[in-house]
Amino acid sequence: MKALILSGGRGTRLRPITHTSAKQLLPVANKPILFYGIEAVKEAGIKEVGIVVGETKPEIKKAVGTGKKWGINITYIEQEKPLGLAHAVKISQDFIRDDNFVMYLGDNLIKDGITSLVKEFEKTKPNAQILLARVPHPEQFGVVELKGKKVLRLVEKPKRPKSDLALVGVYMFDKNIFKAVNNIKPSWRNELEITDAIQYLIAHNFTVRPHIITGWWKDTGKLEDILEANRILLDDLKTHVKGKVDKESELFGKVRIDKGAEIRKSVIRGPVIIGENSRIVNSYIGPFTSVYFKVTIENSEIEHSIILENSKISDIRRIEDSLVGQNVEILKSKAKPSAYRIMVGDSSRVEVT
Image 1 (tube, rainbow, N blue to C red):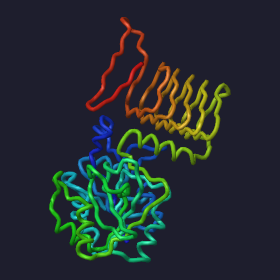
Image 2: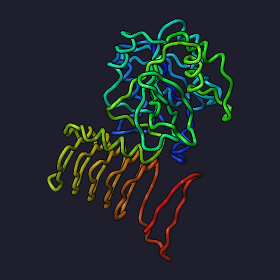
Image 3: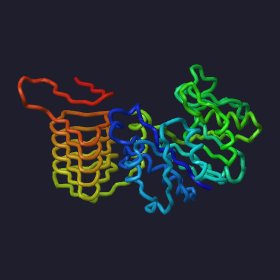
Image 4: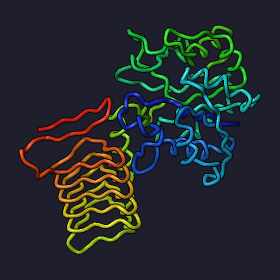
């Protein structure tokens, strides 16, 4: 069995962060989202992995490499434009050939992994197995209608959903999916929709098996989803301290301080991760916060947030529920007259008090 991991999306809902960084490489609990998918595939015993990439290919390739560090082989498959999930399958036929495969969306997180689901697919041998989860806003997803255990219909982001069952970003297919993707037409979005391809299989009497998952799953396409994923993953954190913590600092709860990090005159209340070579000085870092590498935080309070690499926060009273990008400076100005002085990119959001 092979795996196809999709990593070509533009991440428009996370701009401006994704103007300069692939959304699949945003860290959750200080690990790029894409790495969780790769690890899930490896744990399921799959060693041949294709990654579909777009305009962020150089960045993805630099971060992931050949797959050697996971003990797998990675092949990169270029998608000229994000023309739909079924299009990604279509252009991957030379890589997949006649093998069964799992398709995993690179910005999705499934906490319990996919090992049991892959075993189920291999045991029952349907032509397709689709993962479903009940969601509060199904109009934002591909929606599935069931009759008992039979899949009746799939609709991509319907205005009036007929069920609350959304497609989770993991699918399993045999070679017949290529008949489907080569016989459907682009949708109104000018994309080849995977929902249409699966509907083709149903219409032509192929076996499509649904599996409703009850464990935790998250599509990390929006800020609130990334923060929630960060919170849930940090909850499983194990304490270890490899960096320096001075005698005037206090650590409470589950706290990970990576090598080269320095904590001075500060309070860290976990679950919290402080990444390599970061400095926390005279500050408070509160629960559910991930600080990536080479970050400096001085005289500030931060809680329930993600701070990306090489950023600096100084003399800021309090930051909450925030995602701070890489190479960002947030500081209190002493210049007169007193005013907010802000430089932000396209699609930014700033709340001030």
